Length: 482
RNA sequence: GGCGAAGUGGCCGAGUGGUUAGGCAGAGGUCUGCAAAACCUUCUACAGCGGUUCGAGUCCGCUCUUCGCCUCCA
Image (cartoon, rainbow, N blue to C red; front, side):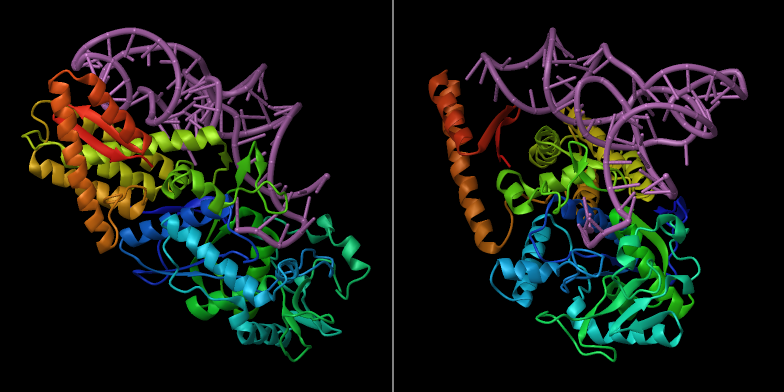
């Protein structure tokens, strides 16, 4: 069985094999840190998180680099507009570095809650100015870049194949730069900036051979990707909206210098929409994750994201989130039941589920199908547990091993124990366990005596605090609602 | 205008030629003191029109509609 990945460059699914056996080099465009993360970030980074996890499960050592863009890029391409991070710094009455640091921490905070694994390397653009300057110098030397008044531009005409990723190869046909041309130093409207001379009062600036200024938008990814992963990498991921111009520019910068393919597999994830319209900061319809987490378990959000394919748009609505919540709860309930119910003699064959799960994940990381396998498994487990012979020790272990691998390690939507954590926490869990056992005993007695007023009171009051009681054939069980 | 993606049942969301995706919601039943959960059964589909084929949601063409990119954006 082999892994197939949809390559945006070829627009087909291709069999994946890493350039160097056993090792995958992977770069994913990180956030620009000038605001809190929103649901769109969640979709993107949860998707790539599962991709990394699955590659690792498949036996690869994945070197995962995800940058932090902490140089403010302009809000506009017309050689004007404002640096976003500076703008935010002005609004918050502080300096750009604090803005960048603050929102970087905020970003990781949210990603941690979503169980997104940290990248192996998270390079910041501001920490790699020398590398970016060196890349520009190489481009100048090879005739792909030119300097005008302290600004350096990449000459698009000098690189054959510019736009091959987005399919936007006919530069004349999309003269979006016409309005730019009048006031810019560019020789060609399609050319893009590699280095910009800083205006008076621009807070983030560095010395370079051309001017005191700051790097262009697309440069950091090429420079840092090549620095940490080499001139040709296996996978480069990012949002679809970055295909053009960002990724096409990255390709141009890198390949113009190395003459080698920059990226073997381009992967692009789709947008989150609200009522069919893209969610975006500039559109002011974005759903802030910290706000969302107040109402909803982050893992429900993770589950919600994974219920659609990464290349599909995901439409957000409260009812959709609620459906995910109920669905995930069902899976967790099965997991709990499996652990708590007494053993029997029933034999369960996990292999078909395992097989289908792997098949789904190997097919361009088809998480919705993988999840559907878990639902079908859940149904089968419940049915088995309902039978008098229940499940044998060995079968239960098989299932738990699979759930652990598929549900926890790969998709990371099921946790070993929702309440487990640090040691102190575990101690308190034990105590709650003891208290709950007493309460359930009292309730069982009340029910035995047909004192349903009391038994219902116990159940209802516990429910008010978020603890749900369910009467099963083997007695009552309890769980904390998420 | 150019480039690209997509239109699936009440909602979300898979499916690149031939047997049920899956989830949520709805209906009926089993179980239960009641409830919840679980299990069983069940109703709504493939935008439209042509074409290819023994057979199409799935391929081809046209039409309509939606979305993304062409300004920063996951």
